[in-house]
Image (tube, rainbow, N blue to C red; front, side):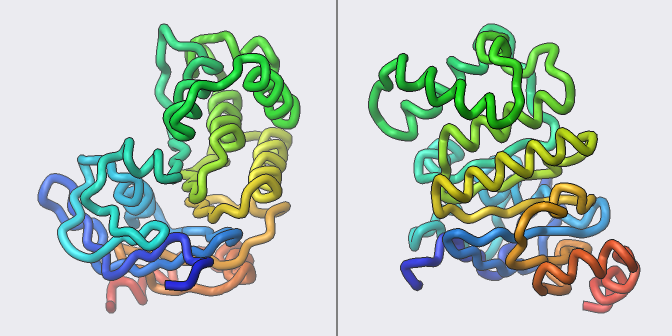
Length: 253
């Protein structure tokens, strides 16, 4: 494995409640790369994201997940998070009783293995919130409670900016966002790339979030199989033609 290689997925089979969803998926992500995963509804895109971060509902029945050279398919969600994996949820949960600020600080302390100086943490948090055009009062509000869809998505990107994971998966981060909010989220992703040379996997239906982001690789997943990998131009092709041609390929595989 090259020193640049962050994630290597080999022949991954994943089942949910005894039904196989992914049938032999391969994927390699290097440091600093942005990968986009597209596909029709029910193709298994979110399943791949959950399996990578170790959600126990998603059973790896065959294949390997190597993260920074170590096999992690047996590791817990917490252990993978501490190693530097991050998943931004499609529908972030509301967590009454813990503020956004406290939640991020706790996650950061776990990741770094040490207590943070509150003053330094607050300054960095304010800076990141400003970049995402978030109202500073949200820091002291309960996590996602009463947040609009757009604010929830921004709160997820805020966590990514603060935690600086080595590998981040953004699952449908742009769904339900208006043009301005999508642009702000794109800015947050650009900032993440500037701050750390992490790898990024963006799972999406829509291509709005990709308009202002440089994309290295595009993958198309149909019926639990990767049917095509290409460059950024593949996104344009999907925009024009949709997934119909690839759905045929997937079924023939």
